[in-house]
Length: 526
Image 1 (cartoon, rainbow, N blue to C red):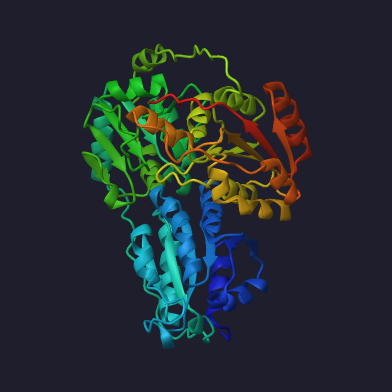
Image 2: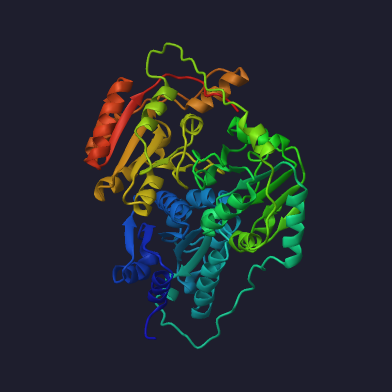
């Protein structure tokens, strides 16, 4: 095989179904870029490496496949760190590729030389220093085999430039990695016994259901057992939220039904979720079954280190106990507190703005949230009908996620209209990505919920009884900025204007930005 290692890498990406690479070129990745130029893979030129990681992150959340991001050594690689750490906190399958200075000068304090593997090790499942043909082949094999088993999260490949240009040596053995064990007959019998003894069981679904392609298995299990279902935030919509089987979001921002169920359940079946602090905030029982491929996320009395797809497949072959309907009836009697009153405001009310936006969203809309006040209003006012319909980097919550993530979402769902919802603070973290949206003419509608300050930080200052400090923003004219990027834009003065102009923007299927001035109001706390 007369190819170099860069070409081999790109060939293996193609073989494993990679269609897009989100990246930014530089000196130490030029061989990889030359290989990409000759491949079928589409490279999406971002305007900042952080944005490349966020775009790959959103692509992965939707497709369940690896999102791939690429950057050069030194500053390029370091700029990826924010986006990679956000994906790591949410177990998103990311393949992070960095170039490095040549092996011949590595460790000699040369230009742009840093120990990248030490940097990425704490924010990836594994960080590989791929310095030979043998290593690159084994590393790639491990990365894709692990993902197929349901072990999800970022992996990092660091490849020196001189290694990228070397001819591939195929005279070696590929190491076979130990696989995740299949569920045992004893485990299956034990779980059936726990379910049979339970009077008030509850299922919690996590985003690993998407990555392990287990949605059909989940539906079969739920239909057979009649056990009520709740979801974590990134798993919203795995079962449509307008389906009576789904109680909705659990935890800090959970629905009344979901949190009543979690408070009163005598058995929790947690599937492909790490059971974070926000998810378990209302759970009172320690009788918890957890199925997860990550041993470090063992947070349950009964922990099973299995692929959730295989686990459910084995359960579904059994004669499953059926939960008495009395438990579900008790849950359904819980009523949501839907009565809301809104004080008169000088500008628009942020929650009413969000409600106006959601009126125009349908099954072909994907919504990307940013850090700040807006996620609260979108969470408590939305009903999702498909998985990954509302993306939020909840584990880390970086400002600036929405704009670049909307780009990845648009490539993952080219037939959807993408709503990128952000604040006047957050958008300025990654505003250069308007250039990418404009270049590719993506059907992304950007909503800048503008209160001229860092609203949630001010709220924390208010609650602490300390004076407002360093949170006021002297903002640019966002409409003029959008125009500078050849994106249509409007200042919005009323709810009716927002709804009518949004409807036209959706029909146009072109990039559009709405700047919406809202009042400074505290968000409701959990």
